[in-house]
Length: 288
Image 1 (cartoon, rainbow, N blue to C red):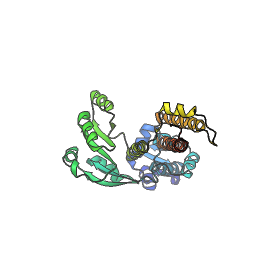
Image 2: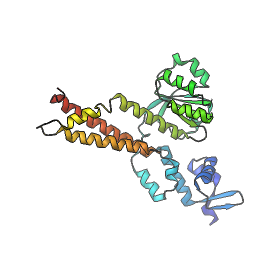
Image 3: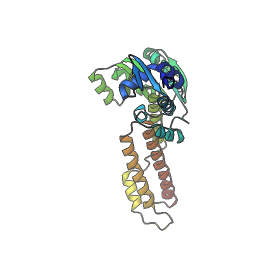
Image 4: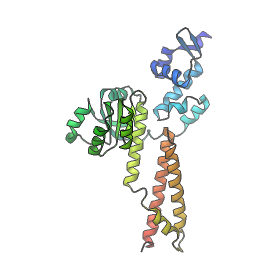
């Protein structure tokens, strides 16, 4: 039976998961090795297979909290589905801070181009006028200075994700009030950061194309418009309202890559349906 067990170092080499990560999963999520002799951990073949599947799914944006409780068969089903939001994601990022750059360097995969790297927040603020094209910025800071970071966010006018080392309760309250996206170093992974970037860029994209191009009053007007064509505006309005409500509900409960992707698809679908409604309204001059 001994030859069917693997020490933690061999598991790390086989799966590509760092030893420190495996130990952290044992502490945080109860992913215990099959056997422990004193301080030596031994994993069996099924556990190694499960960890390999988890590694693949993490790289596709799924949450470890979601994956760790699943069976091997359930994990295989997930790997057979189409890739998550990261698979075809293309964006450019600027990384500020050594810890952030180390996270990116140690990541097994990434679908965002790194447009620039800087050592510190001071360097970033000194070079705002020379920054080239970048879709979003991930900034490391020692202390969560909401005033400073809020001013930076306004100056950049692109998604700003902050990773901080220390923060007081007042700092957190002020950062929340300023709608900053902030996360504690050590409690957020590179995949988590990519997920946040994709979500924020998706929200901007949907906003820029006018996701909610009709107000509630306009939808109410269109739903009551008498119409003799093949598709009544009310039918489209009912779908738009249902999709808006569903997207709002999913967004409220989103805490993993699947939820983000699902909400994004629903929002895009609602936007497409509003395109159709706008075509009908313009063609038949329903607002005249």
